[in-house]
Length: 386
Image (cartoon, rainbow, N blue to C red; front, top):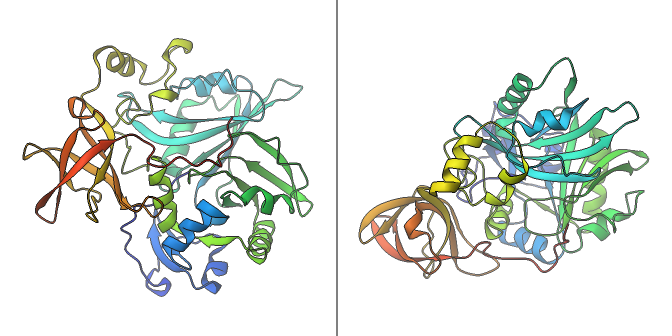
């Protein structure tokens, strides 16, 4: 799921007056978190430090308050076939308890948002049920889009965003820490698997998903359950983590950030998300014609991974050069805490997107060498497969 660029303007909580706050806001205040404004929300950017929190997720376990994200439940007859018209991914192959990372597309195949659709199955009356988690800053836009394109007579849409806490517990020891509070056995759950169970005897929705490149779960529960779970996880040593390390973790795993790496002007084929475009097994969907054309003719630009030398960090918005001419732009960049060198994502012309291609990035008016590298920059050995 989604976070924030590393170069974050930090503000004291008393200076942010108009942002929304999650139900876990007070817990973060008590932990002396530093806050920032993100997507209309006042969110913790760090607690004990970005690097320490990053290393906790890579080596042990960390937890994130992601309650700001949009949370929808939908149910109705022929729900999956209706959703199929809005995304390029084949949802018909989903079995109950499985999920699909995908994108909502506009008519030009631009990405309205990247989302996860969790299929919960069909009841005895042929009613299909799904949970959809969307980005915080696009919650209202996504809700409007879905309601415009789904049949209101057959689909019941509920926005649970204000009513539920969402906590991501991530890292090699995340599952073992979480298991002691969950009634169901989490061991058999595969990547992108999910289930409804109980925590402290109360209903809970758990999914083996995340935005860090590590194993772990995202947990959706009622407010009081979430507050207690956060405290209990903290008591057993799970490290509270903010948006700062969420960004360095997702960038190491080359996971796109909506609004920077992908937006409504970029298509999934341009953004390296071709693996979620299933043209061969799908019927018509919004944006299909554009994607078919790009598949046949090729795309004009591609999102690439870059590595720069030394400590020269290519940050969001910095120009990418080839032979002294600007050919593209950095979308995200940081110095990788795990790898120890600067990494970045950038759009460049397709002919310059090959691995080992030599480019440059303009940093504070000076050009520094950069090379196109494979993505992801880092692949965890602890991840569970699906």
